[in-house]
Image 1 (tube, rainbow, N blue to C red):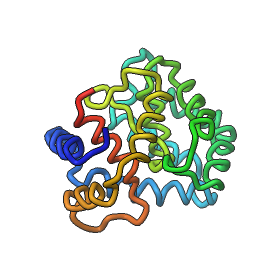
Image 2 (cartoon, helix red, strand yellow):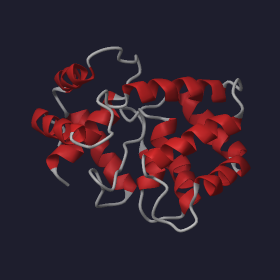
Image 3 (tube, helix red, strand yellow):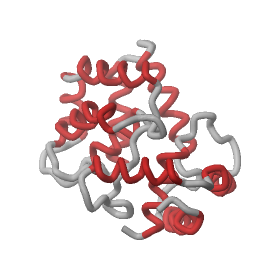
Length: 204
């Protein structure tokens, strides 16, 4: 699945979407990282960080589809469950995992937590929520372009295996770099973003 042709098709499809950033979320990932670090280190009030996450979940159209699942509803639940969420985050943060080295068992608790927030069968919301927390660990599922036709575990493991078997990782990174052009953040989530773009490009 992960190859030059699929990546190029995925890039063109991505660029064709109205209001999707031409830097492939590089700037957004920079802000996410900064705000995440402030939250994790206790510099920023949890409510401010969670509000940023919720606002962007709405922008990414992850809140629609369930009656009553509003930004305020989600904010209330996240504030109530902040200690539990922080526990999951602490474990993953301390282990410094990425999709390259993680197993699904490493991430299933926080994914199940996210899925339980909306209580929907679709993995879209949970994948985006978890991707915002750990962009290098969770691949996004999107209803419009990269909708997984299976459960999230199967999708995630397929993306992980496809990336691990890819012999041209550096070439694919260079292709994406040329699109982003400059100011690439040091921890840009190549593996998850390229897997997502190739999944879009192959036509699922």
